Structures are given as structure tokens and as C-alpha cells.
Length: 170
Image (cartoon, rainbow, N blue to C red; front, side):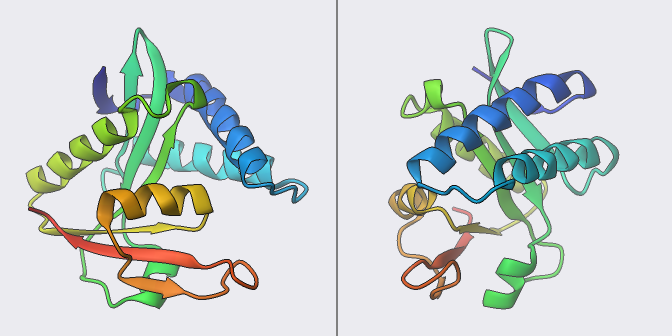
């Protein structure tokens, strides 16, 4: 498996990955909001394209056998995080973590996360933020990061919280 920055030649492959990941995720989460799939795929594709022009928003892929099987990015903390926790200027949020459904539970997420932590260290950072709204994502990140630093209660509806973590790099 290879970890690298996204390139312009990856646009079609990342679009395909996001479509499959989000279709699977929305099905598992039983979310049927009309237009959400298309909106999220479009949002993620804009993030990929923005990263090509903006060094401050790097986007990375996991590649195996010339196929993109996962993504992860670094962004300045977004409104969800900044409204939940005080943030450090110049810090990063770990974002856009997606693993193709056929490759989930095979270590791809762990591979992406270990590499993004190394990227943060290379950039001189000592901490990062991460947030999760989907229940399956929350479970994954709770297993990896432990208890969240902040719970935004009922953000997605009654009993549907949004979780936010701030973690120091080891």
C-alpha cells in the first residue's frame, strides 16, 4: 500500500471512491435524505481540487495496485470543531477519512491515520483535532482515540450527537 498526496490524475478515481463509500455509509446509517449523497460527493471533490492549489489543505490517498482505496486530509479546524472547543491557531483537523467498502477492516484506515500523524509531525505539529457525526465513524474513532473531548448533544436530532476530539501527538 502506498500513501501519497492526491494528484490531478486522481480526480475520477476519488470521485468513484467517494460515491461508493458514501453510498455504503448512508445505507448502513439508514439515512435517506434526498440529494445528500450527491452533495457530499461534490463537497469532497471540491476539497480534492482545492488541495491541488492550496498547500495548507493537503489531501492524501492510499493506493494499492494503482487503485485508490482510501483518503485522508488535513484542514484548518472547521466550524464544528471551533464551535465545540478552543483551537490553536495554525493547527489541523484530520478530515475526509474514507476507505472503500471492499477494503474496510483490512488496516487501510489505520495505515492512513498512522501516515497522517507522521505528516503532522513532519509539519511540526504537536496536536490535532477530529470530529465525527456518523455513528459508525464515531465508534471507529472512539476505538482509536478513546473518549471524545467534547460531545455536541442532539446535533443531528434527539439522541444523535456529534463527537469532537483534540489529541496530542505522541
